[in-house]
Image: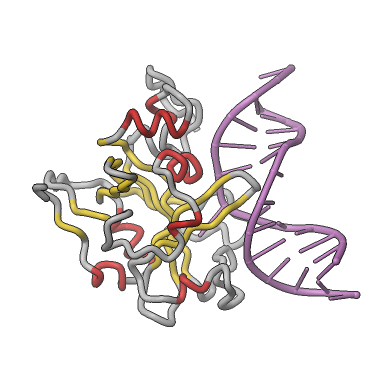
Length: 208
DNA sequence: TTGCGGATGGACT
DNA sequence: GTCCATCCGCAAC
């Protein structure tokens, strides 16, 4: 099988969560299920540093749930929230230092029929425009906790088309602590960014 | 052992 | 626009 894409090296993930979040925008994420590949471009991500970030799960220290966040960057941190939803994070930084990047929005480019099946919807623009939606569309669950992102099950690549990406930053979403920090990064004007609600076939201006 | 908060999404009005 | 289902990890007792 031809591999036009090159996997991002382990070293890429050892940068800080904040830098990693910015640099992940525009990268391609690939998921292999059985013999099928699902992939998409990351358009939205949030950084969670361990220290001095009360919004981070790792803020209170290492626990069984968060221990992978203290490991070396380049692994998957998957957690379950609100009883219904999985969220997928990429561990950042060096071993011993906590940090992770939450993937919030992805633009589908391959395996779209599988995503529609996983999400049980036909609405293309509603497949992956949110952390829980993305995880479900990509078949992500706790079995991927700690999975190496340079492996085969789920891995990141640099797209062959290396377009210049416009990255905007804002406050993070859905948290109650440390909300002022501008740790959320996203691709401007991309319909798969989660902030804009109610996206239909016709794009209305987001008045808010 | 119990109680509770949470980095959400979907159904419904 | 509003409300609510529903699981896991953690702290307290």
